[in-house]
Image 1 (cartoon, rainbow, N blue to C red):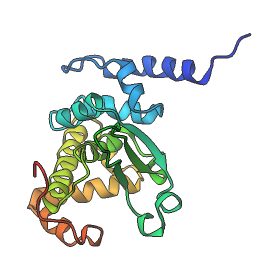
Image 2: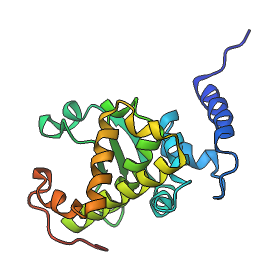
Image 3: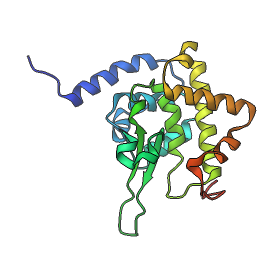
Length: 204
């Protein structure tokens, strides 16, 4: 008996998982396009869930239109102890005229077991960081987008999803509550990780 290669097995699992998304009103995604972003099954599923939200459509287009890799990494070991609690980090090379931009979205390894819906909300945020600049306004927009995508996905899934034991879901529920009372901007300004950022960046 011949065994399936890991990539072929991944493709089979992802194709079968599409049964859960039958009936979606949004246009289907090409699996090849998703696999260019990541070979992690949970990330591919997250991108599919993002496709089912109105708020996440712009972010998904950014991820699929521009070269990007999405990978899980232990943040402290990869970037240092100061980054241990970062949920995700967008990294982009600062190219000259003759080089190709390289872009990677690192997701904290601790979120590998998070539901794909939660990862979809996180990636919607990270997708907007598509250049080398960042700002308080850009982070505020990202946090708000993350909360909006999470709101939509909670409406499409069983209510129990909001209570799954996951540090990422705890974050998303906090953002959702902050969005409802209009306090996300204050949360971003008070976040020590954003000290030194300019008030605005390109597009924000």
